[in-house]
Length: 196
Image (tube, rainbow, N blue to C red; front, side, top):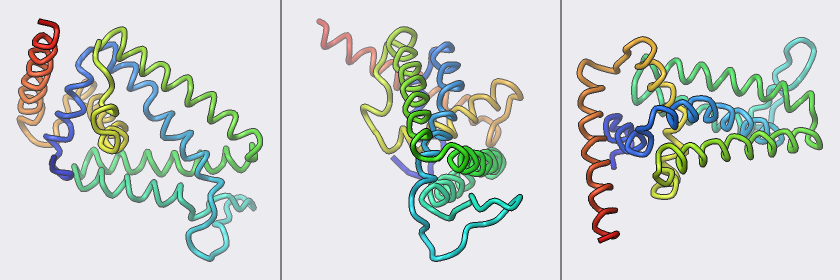
């Protein structure tokens, strides 16, 4: 699958998220997973020898693996679609700053407990969404890297499309929907053959 082919990436993820309730569950829980992961990455060492960026007389913005994660994801999303990707990049940097503030204030001994509780809640919600509403295993079981990479951008694009009718280019939604419908039909046909 082309890493920079937005249609294929979105269609792969969309084939596992076609139920409206499951989509809503993911819209609620995917970004908190990314945010709390960044809280955990706040405690990684700096990737450059430098002093932290000081704001409000506090040194909490460290160019560490959380920052690197944010930059890589932001650049990838912008390369997929300039408008929605730029919004996703902005949201990622807001998450990085917010997670750095939270990590700094909580300290590691409390932060990892908050992260663990949040991750358990969010992942449980998503697995319930798949098991109860989608009735299909999550995408991460078939392509772990792609599922983690596309999840935040997928829910953002889904939200922009639902709320504002946004498309990266004219006809995007219809083309992707046709691919998703074909993927779901193939999956159902394959599942039916296994049952017979």
